Length: 176
Figure 1 (tube, rainbow, N blue to C red):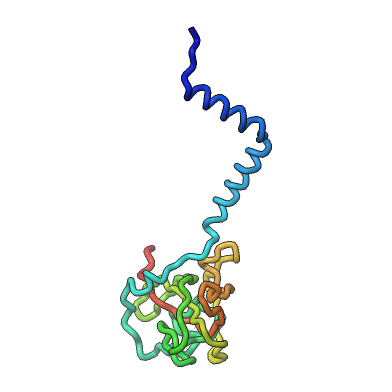
Figure 2: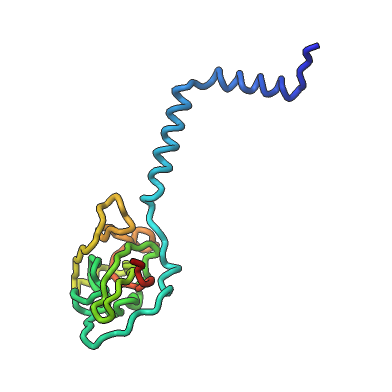
């Protein structure tokens, strides 16, 4: 005898019910949306704040001027320097908070002839500082590579999205 179990009957009726309500085109459309959504994941902003103190900064030279756009660590900065706005080259001024999402660059330090991975944070919470504007785009990537692009207002992740100035934090030595 051909007796089917209760599980077989339930599975068959469920499958038939789904088949009556859906189509192959609908399935392919949903599958396509899933693939497109998965391909967009690398474009999401990246939180690098936990690695901000991962590396010790190199020995500082007396020739380094953190209020100058020519300072080696500012090779990919775009904005007002926090060192001219009450902070330092690596810390936000009082009354502002660093954005948890950043863009990165690889800068060459002429003092020790090494390349460093530098994270650039926007300091948020006050209106723009207006002092020492720098726009250096060395090794900047196009807008589809957000984590390496400096043209975004990264304060959008903060409670107060007002941009004030930008800092640079050394994350580590770049491997060659």
